[in-house]
Image (cartoon, rainbow, N blue to C red):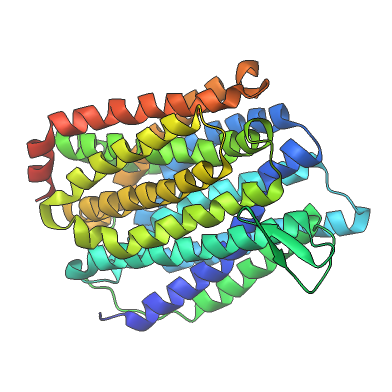
Length: 423
């Protein structure tokens, strides 16, 4: 690999900032649902934020294709670190943090995700030989989910604290020599802000040689977005694959932020340790998937892998809709990690092969925009009082089953055409 050192530094920066990001994004939904008991407020805010990302998402890809991807990382890390540090300072000064400022951190992080991950993949594609695309995507998945695994473990400890030399994690109790109270949200934000600045310093050290010279389109953001849309309109089956393979990701995001904390509290009737531990099990599954999926479903079997993953997780979503079991829940989280990460690796590798690097950002922004519409629809459904009453949140997983199976069917019906479109 020609830019091996650059890739290593990129991964290191992503690990450091991703760890605290992950803890913050686990802590925020639980803060609203359990600490201040305002789940509806959070759901409505999440709907508005997702709506705003529709417009931001349309242009994020065009920015990635227009400007230096290294500079994009530097700018986003500086902006996010500065804002989150300011919110943390406010919290320390007042010994409490306004829910509106907590939502601001959530918004900033979501907006950052919309440019960070497409930029990460595009940057990786830019500095990596084509023969290493599948390996690169697997490494990104392994690195990202290893970070999330530790974030879930640390969040479980920080959100519950330690007393009587014991901590609860993953459904079990462990001896722990130190006793401390649960961290306040502004303390978690401080750790988050610091890692952004450390990541910024590491990215500044990255030096690389572009594998190929890109033809940069310099038109308006709107015209560049339309050019990405026109590219996909001429390649119908690439569009089909990108559209339907994104549905598991759409449901997973809504599940993590809206369904999961309410499911743990209202249906399983468990606490923060079980909620945060779900991220740990999810990440173990995702790491496993990152190691093995591209080896199992290589060459022309990527689409088959997507269909198998959709079907498998649908079965377990159905089971946890009716069976109240923490251990079945953890198994489902493990499988969700395997399937969602597996689909992401297969989808990204497929799109890398099918779409040139100079237009990859614009093409993926089209898929992201449609994905946001789907998420808005799901959030709108789950904001209905029915799902937040009693243990009715369990039925949300049945909606996930319907969404995934209705996406797997057109992929299966167009199987041969989609496989041909990759080449």
